[in-house]
Image (cartoon, rainbow over all chains, first blue to last red; front, side):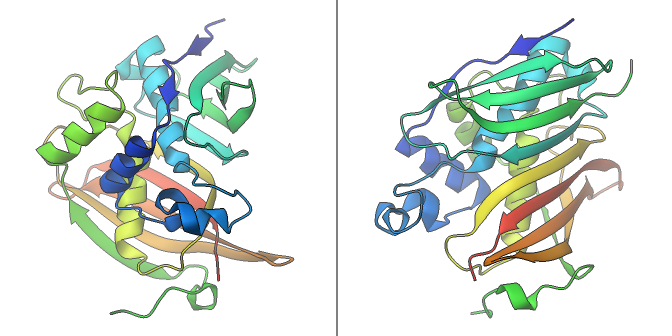
Length: 122
Length: 132
């Protein structure tokens, strides 16, 4: 079995702004504390893909960049990620070869993203 | 100023537009500051950029949007990573709409190819709760 993890990403306000610049996603739910305070989240949340990006990063680091062609990720954002959170990937190889159950986990051990990662057969 | 994209403007199967663009040095610098472990390898772009580039293309086409949309899920398939310096061409269409109680969901499908030679690069499906 080939399980893998990622480095930890610490979510900072400056990082959210930088990610907004990269994606051009200035949704106020991410970048406007006053707006976010009026939403069910109560405070700004990080962009979901800011964490999602780490799945392919971790897979490439653990398994090799050559495994990324043909990769498929099916992800659900199940919890918000806030400023100050520490996020990392845990990937457990499923019974099916070339398939992993993946979670992005916060510092409380809670999954914020659940995903299935499938790679093309070697 | 274009009319805002409200939920009732979306129809499943609707082509929403096409965008082309590259990744300039400034964007690479932003990326490296965020993810210092995710650099270019073998002349290809950093692997983690795929979902961010899908978002960037969708956001460039489906605009203006109501504030407060929430991204709830995403699928992506990588055919091959773009080479450094590639110009990417992404088309975006509305894949589905759904109302569940008071929540309104929109699925968008994206297809990204190399703008020069048409090589298939990556596809995505984004699911969002639309604010209004």
